[in-house]
Image 1 (tube, rainbow, N blue to C red):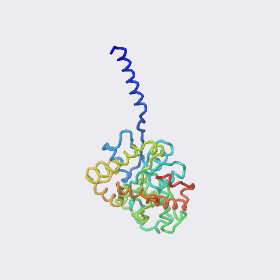
Image 2 (image 1 turned 60 degrees about the horizontal axis):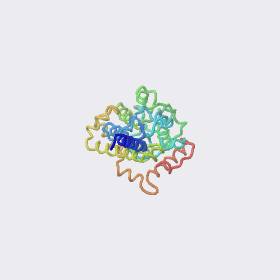
Image 3 (image 1 turned 135 degrees about the horizontal axis):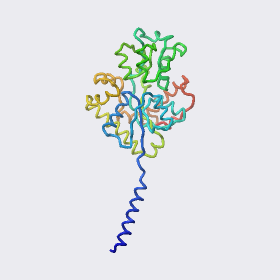
Image 4 (image 1 turned 90 degrees about the vertical axis):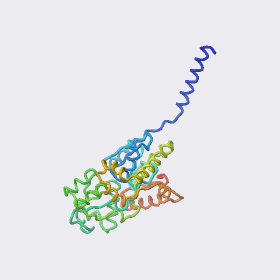
Length: 311
């Protein structure tokens, strides 16, 4: 074979390789975010231990308001949010698919009162601090509804998550709607639990939302995120002491404190997720319908949503 033929063959092979590689659909860059909340920690553990593909970048925002804003502005492809926050986004036209249930709060979300304030009746006329995102508004609405009170019976003070402890400890509010890890630290400082999510079972649920285009075009990426979550849960269960040390820098909670937190915040594993999405009218749909109705009744949202688009 002469040199010209060899050269032509080499060029053809090179062009073929370029053509084939060019046809591959590259993995998308996934920016995913949450806030300092124990229920989201397995995501951060999954990232630190290399369970996610390298195209997935996990961010942390100081408040849910900022996560919602980033998702609306297309600065995130995925977000860890409460189910009511997802409903809120859909009502505003910012859609996405729920691919995982992360946890169901059974006492980790609370209304705390200053020392001396112990019952709902003690809250009348008082200043209640709340991050008035969907979750804050939802918790406040359910507290008032459950205790036969009206918005006019209290004074609302807007407080973002990163200022919760400061406002409460400086007594700038009489009561505060918050959640762990802030809840645990403030209770240790003398705060009283007046109302918590165990009184509205199944209504405070955290989920992972991903943009519809990513969900439809990149099923392998969706699968990798889900498997990373499950693998992280297995690691946490098998070596909780080591996992607790990894969580401490973000949550500032000891191993014992974290165990107490997870007692009222069960994390959703593979089997629980299968159950949540199984059937023609799965539990996730029923949860959406229930919370959606509460939000409509309390005028937290104004627009209709299409539930079938949510999962």
